Amino acid sequence: MKEAETKHEIIEQYYINTVEEKKVSAGDQLPSENEMASIFNVSRHTVRQALTYLVQEGWIYKERGKGSFYANKKLKETKKNIAVLTTYISDYIFPKIISGIEEELRKKGYNLLLFNSNNDIENERICFENIINQDIAGLIVEPAQSTINNLHHESIKKLEHNNIKYIAINANCDEENSAFIIVDDEQGGYKITNYLLELGHKNIAAIFKADDLQGEKRRKGYIKALKEYDLSLNKNIVGEYITDNEEMYIDQFTKKILKLENRPTAIVCYNDKVALRVIDNCRKEGIKIPKDLSIVSFDDSSLAVSSDVKLTTIKHPKEEMGIRAAKCIIDMIEGRIDKPQYTYSAELIVRDSCSRV
Image 1: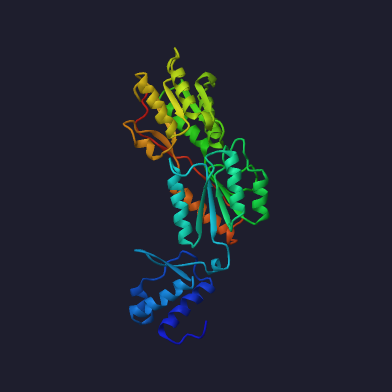
Image 2: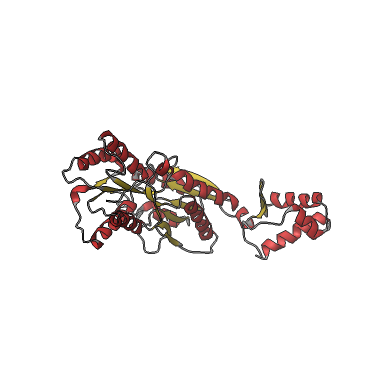
């Protein structure tokens, strides 16, 4: 840029120097227009001239109603696209996760490309091929069917060959040093089961998803809590389903345990969706929640409070996880961190779906 001569050029050069000398980070906020006018002793019109130029040249970006923020100028010379590949997109907790990712990427000048595997390994493979063949800098991925799919396949090798950074959410890849952000699901399974045990329940049924790591770890936590109370695992009241037969299995399993002579007094459900389906089946059989059966679940989704039974559940950070995942993948792309790993502690949310024995 030529040597600053006019007042607005002086302002422009000041903020360009601030970025180049790394005195600020992308996403840091600039002073308001009034504050800048006071700092440089100029009119707001002059400030707006400077800001318009800085936006056009990619040094800053504006957000309506919030103000002006520093951008990463290096993005003009690097890839700006980040892919997000999740098992689902439009329902349950996924809109909030994706919203958190999108908000953070937009603030930092990156674009989001969204892909959906529908929790199917073959669909995931096709999505990977599409991602690899596009101008992608990084990938945030929730692995499909993560107990039988550790992402150790050609797709991961191609990501690495193309220098595409990646981080997994809700399940860590089967690598010692892979990047991931997860909730401590084993701790969650333990906490939610221990809560029932503290209420006096001993005959506790459970239903988990068998083809993802979250289900496997929640089951481990459930078993750990039972052992601490010297209770043996009764496999007849522990159900495990896979993605393809979810609804049918839940219906059949619930009807089976409700007909047992020694009927369970509580049930641990893999997530809030499962819990609501169990509740529907209980109603058909005249079983009242929580009077006749206590129910606990996972994720604290909008479904947890959508019916007259408000679910006691383990919280999923959702939007916060999305924001963290976006920050991590940007830091990986821009070389500030190699392979970040973060685990959220399991937080129990107590509502009215349980009663004391």
